[in-house]
Every structure is written in C-alpha cells, then in structure tokens.
Amino acid sequence: ARAGTLLVGAICALPVARRAACSGTAAEMLVLAGLGLVAYSLFFIDSKHVFPGFNALPVALGTAFIIHGGGSCNRISAVLAHPLPVAIGLLSYSLYLWHWPVLAFLKYSHPNPGVGLQLSAVAVIAALSWLSFRLVEVPCRASVGSFGEIASRQLLLPSIIIISLGVWLSATGGFGIYGSKGAYAQALESVAP
Image 1: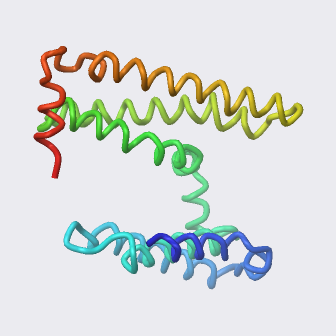
Image 2: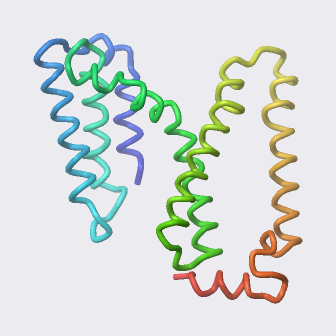
C-alpha cells in the first residue's frame, strides 16, 4: 500500500532527479503545485477514503514537487527555510515514531479524552520526539567506532531497555493505569473495534 510513496521518495533521492532540479519561475510553480497537492490531501481526504493506496499519491507527489522545486532560491523556498519548518522537518521522523504509541496509550487510559489531555499528548509527543532526535538520531549519525561497539551501543543496549520496560509494563498490568483489578483489560476491550 505504501510502495507508490516509497517509489516517489526513491526517485527524488536519485542523483538524476537532483541534477534535473529546476530554478526560477518553474521551481516556484512546481512548489506551488506541490503545496496545492498537499493542501488537497489535508482538506479533502478523510476517513471515507481508502488510505494509503492511491489516495497517498497526491501528498507524496506534492512533497516531491516541494523538495524538487524548493532547492532553488525563490520566495516559497525562503518561507520553507524558516527555522520553524526546518525544525519540524528535523523532528519529523521522531514525530512519526512517537505519535502512535502516545495516542494509543491515551486512548487506552482515557477512552474519551478531553481537549486538555489531547493537548498534553501533543506536548508529550513533541518532547519525546525532541529527546529522540537529540539522544538517538544525532548520536547515531555521528557514530564512530567498530561495528561491534556501534551495534552494542545502538542496538543491544536499547533493546535490553525496551524489553525490560515491556516486561515491567506487563507485570504491573500496564503501569497500573487502572489498578490490578482487571479494569485495564476491560478498558482495552471497550476500545477494540
């Protein structure tokens, strides 16, 4: 279902695509078209549409257009080069990784969360994403050492921590969200499709 979006991204990364980057008015028009496709996806693709599948292509192509046309100096590129979009871009992978577990945990612990809890979840996602970026992504990119050192530091140790956390959560009935009276399991059943 995501093969098309991966293909679009792979084409963007090809050296041939980078050399064919446009400039001036053509680049600006390409970025505008890309923004239009992303806006279309944001406002017109909803829960009634199958996603990802073919409905993921407008946002994937739009993003590719923005990347392809955004490399040249134009007004839109200047806006996208502002520190806020750049920071969101740097955190995007961590945001992608953290949003689902935090939102799932929120849904399990509070089946009908209010606006305050939802905003708190957004803040938690942002904080965890920033921590992941600073403590995992940046050090991984700058790794030096033998394969064994890197593997033990970046694979073995985190795996031990994650497995230990999973065992602890399982043993405590989900961090004791509802106590040990089986209410956690009942809450999980109440939100199951």
